[in-house]
Image 1 (cartoon, rainbow, N blue to C red):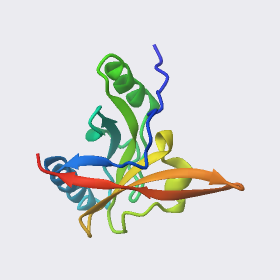
Image 2: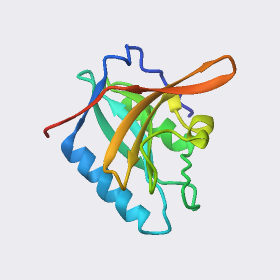
Image 3: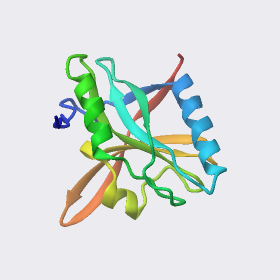
Length: 151
């Protein structure tokens, strides 16, 4: 059974929160992947009613350096699990092994499930949340406020 991915219905501009423990785990996994041929980690962002993001790691279907690919079937499986929980898939996330936490051309072309992407810069130990939009045939990204909170 295929699940339609519901779009997060609330205002993105208010911002979101990520637990410090989740951020540390993201960095550990991303650093480990970086050390193996500059691979990337990836997954989906699950958000609760308090606007706290939970990172759900998925297998990177790409075995190429500096790339990630998420299987839609994996996302659909998580969507089905969330249907009755009050949680939503906000978007996706991935790591940048050696570049900043800013979206590149490839990210803008292939990423941003539901228009939202969290990017983690392994070297700079930074994570930024982005929202993409299209205007006049050009895709752009604007940063969404993201606070790292205790927990």
